[in-house]
Each structure stands twice: as structure tokens, then as C-alpha cells.
Length: 117
Image (cartoon, rainbow, N blue to C red; front, top):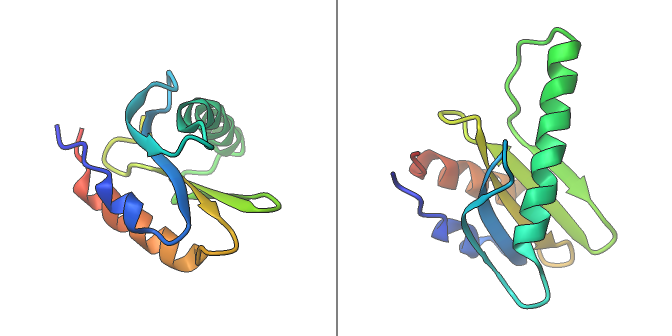
């Protein structure tokens, strides 16, 4: 198992990040500062992933999720299910004033390619 998410730390404006089991919300790996509870956020976002997967299924779409972007006033949150292990996802929270969402998505995709479960 190769759980190395250190590449997420390189994203400009990152507040915290995690690799999360989408069925349980359990953190497989995480990092974050004292002002950001990455474990609580990751567990809550497991529910977001489940709801989106249910919506895709109910609509009869046969498409995987590339990523989910949630924007708040000062933050944006990116969720990327692992294509090789869709029962887990990468998650990062970013400071919107500093982060570039396009570059963050590319870095998230690159980290995804290096993670194996």
C-alpha cells in the first residue's frame, strides 16, 4: 500500500488534506493545521461523495467522478475519488485568496496517480 499524500502540501494555499475511506469517513492519511479540523471535514465529505454517487446512479449515468469542487467565502474544497480505488478519495481545503483552483486540480490528479491501496 502506497499512501503518500505529501504532494498535496505543495498546493498553494493548502489548509489541510487527507486520503479518506468514502464508506466509513476514516482517515487513511492526513495533515492540517491547528485551525482546520481535517479529520472532521474529511469524514463529512465522505457523505458528500456518497450522495453524489447515489445521484449519478439514480440518473442512470455511467460516469466516474473526476472531482467535486465546493467553494465557500474564503475557502475552496476539492474532492477527488481515486480512479483505481473509488472507495477512497483525496481531499484538500484551500485558502481561496492564495490558491489557483486549476493548478490545485492538476496537483490533486498527480497525487492520485501516485497513491495505491
